[in-house]
Amino acid sequence: MPGPSSEADSGRRSWGLPLLLALLTGVVGAGAMWWVMGGRLQVAEQQAQTLQQTVTRTQEELLGHSRYTSYLTLGKHALAEHTKLLTATVVREEGVTEVIERYLLGFSSSGTVAIWYTAEYPFGYDLGPGQFDLRATADGLEVRLKKPRMIASPAVRNLRYKVLSGGVLTDEKAAVIQLYARAADEAASKGRALAPDPAVTALCEKKLVEFLREFLRQQPGVRSVPHVRVVYTD
Image (cartoon, rainbow, N blue to C red; front, side):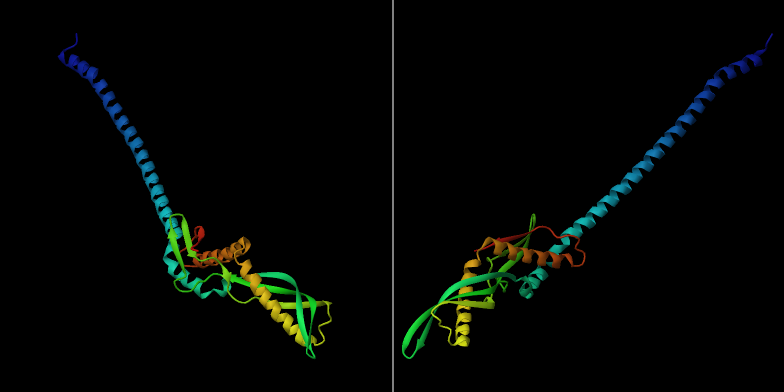
């Protein structure tokens, strides 16, 4: 017959086992929870680092893209100092028929001469002080100035001629000088008429924009230059 001590031992075993299992379950659960939380914390730290790197890289890129605004004043000076580099030269073969007067022994006669020559027309912008402006806008850069114009007298070269009637070139040297003078006047008139031509405007704009973009692109810290728009004020 079991005594009181045996019954007590049996009771302790009956509640001790569930308690042990509960403690083990709690320890395992806590360990699992710690492992899960630790893993989540590591993932969160990695995401935070990635986000910080992205923000830093974006800030650097934005700074590199926008730093060109620091050089707009220098860009204006560069445009003004390099006007000759911005000249757009249009070369055309011209021809015209001229009538030349000849005076001999008090009598006047005339003859018809056809002349051909190569004309070089220089077009560009007035980039003097106060004549243009360079500014940053919401979508890039803007150059405000007057339309292109002929900035110098056309160069006339390779003059050829042919007497069509009258035989007036008895003094050929004097006649050629006269033909050159007429060709120069004719070329100047044609150049002024050619200045508003859309093809001339497009050529001048191309040289201006390319020069400005290249200048800004070479400045320290500038990674890219935005769209440059040319706006005419006349």
